[in-house]
Image (cartoon, rainbow, N blue to C red; front, side):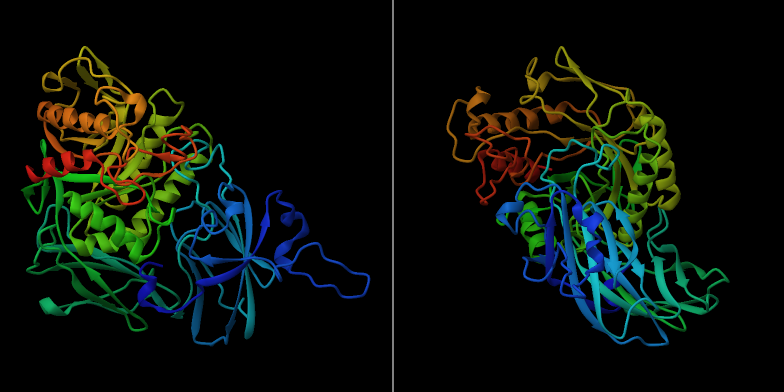
Length: 567
């Protein structure tokens, strides 16, 4: 269900007992059964009692030194009390578990979920006992060759129950989903729907926006679907005026409330239009990591740390790399007037030719869209990053995924991020078949870092196979250790001056880019990544941040801040 926060819920957050299982022997010993000795000669070679506890939500890597670099299995247990009610249904809701989750209630398997960054639930009506109940979750964050992401990626693989867990109680027929957003291209017409789940599918449904005196009434059909088509004089959401309305959705058996904004986002030729007006996307990439805790971010506090830093830089958009971030991040950005780029973790090294992978990508895309489709701050669905046209089945799989995403939601921009452009004779040759299906020419380029300049930045040339589409520089930059001194023309000392020079050259080059609609430096904060093994300058961190993990602004930050003041 969406908007679980507005339901009658009981939080299961807090301390959970755990068993650390690096060899996966718990599966053979059936840990979820929680067996106890029955006679004097019995012994059981596992126990949650007397062992460590971990906080939920929270990654296990940052909570115990012995788990810092763990990619493996941790069993988690929570006991809760409940008294069943005959006229109610009960659901077990997870905000996210990374990466594989097997969930057991009172020794019975409820099911499994794959994917580390989107919510899932199990109905436990009729399965829950009166009184004490035992919930066991097996979490496995080992990388899979046919996982999404795959084996290789440039961020710390934080494992665990990383977002909220709750019991959600509903009536027998409840509002499980709805879409209340403006019709594509319209500034005053909402074209959406409400869906009921339960036996009494045909009901009277109301959509109310009290501030606008909107009270729209309709009936759901036998499948529980009620179509919504209403008009109102909306005060449109924008970065300058992030207006949200209370929207109340009622049926005969349920009622939910949401804070929803209304805006239009579209591409018109070479321009991106917000509410029919051109806008330059002043963006920054962000990983879901609280830099001061070196831990997975999930809370409102975490979100505000990251978003306030983006706002201070001068941003009106954050690219949430490279996976859907916690719902708190999306909602807080919307309240602050920051547009959001939502992305699924289709990142390099994906085994598109594996028969299971396209279905996994589709599931993650659908779970992302389902959760965030009513967040007007979300303006972009990003379906891949740095994949390669020569990879078997890559083009076919991502084209099909794009078509399915557009069928689900045609109101937002859909993007594929590419880094396959060639750079020769100070000229970018930009091409990729996926650009036929992407609303923006979104490209990553690290000229000045991974590739040296071949001429003056101000004299860069561009050959773009789609000359009428907006161009968005989705990644650029270079590494620097805060406080490191060194020449501005020598990369080896990871100096702030060298990074600063990259940014000066890049901002000069931006004036040469045809149809430039926005830029997005990589990245806001230095963040943890095991592949970064320079023992002097990196120490397990990607150092491309404009800000250090301690909150210190590097010299390049000021270059980017000044550039955004001009846009």
